[in-house]
Image 1 (cartoon, one colour):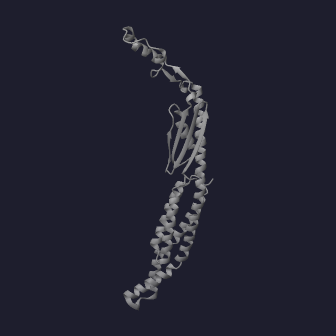
Image 2 (cartoon, helix red, strand yellow):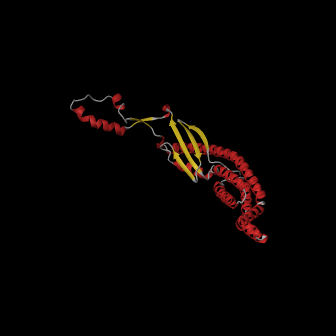
Image 3 (tube, helix red, strand yellow):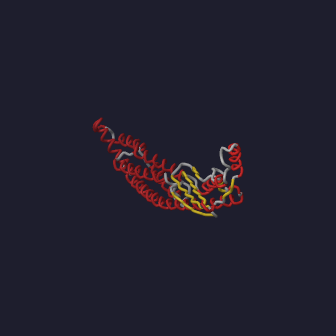
Length: 292
């Protein structure tokens, strides 16, 4: 399975009886998996469902899941709250008894706040469970859409990362060709410097000995071998899934070797290649931040 990105969006809608809802799931880059959930009251089990669904599909990223649900106006049954009605009657009874007010009419009583109310679907446990299961299915569908979007981003990232790895590989090859000229350049530079300080009396074997010691210190063979190995390892990783952290670590190793290469460089051409290499590695690092 190829790499996946961490940015995407998924949406799903559903309806059951008088209820209709919409679920949106979106994600952005994140070092770990974080899930934020917003849902309607009365469907408390959905948050756990959303977290479990996210953990089953994703490894990293900041996910936001929103559920909006509404009930059709004509779909809600109504009832008379007898307890509330009796409280109103008891409160007004003394005033009716003294003649201060006329006996209440039914239409007036029914218009008082809290006397007529919508029958809550939560009172029906079976209906509530059925509704929650239907909304949970939409949450799963939204996650599947988000997963598809993140994989689509991963396919685009795969091409970008592969292209950058090709560039890094070419620069490593260029560095190898330039590094072959370092020993001769070091010898010539050292010979000129010794001639400036001690004249022509410096023995040739002394020049060769000192130049060889400097060449050993400036040898970049090990760094180039490591860079080539890192390129090969990165190519294998971009064909796998959930490798963002490993690619990020590998990028740090890339940059470490490139810095050492530049510090050991004794010729301008190798330094130029080293600087170009660092620039491409930085581009690679920026793209790796988008990988799950």
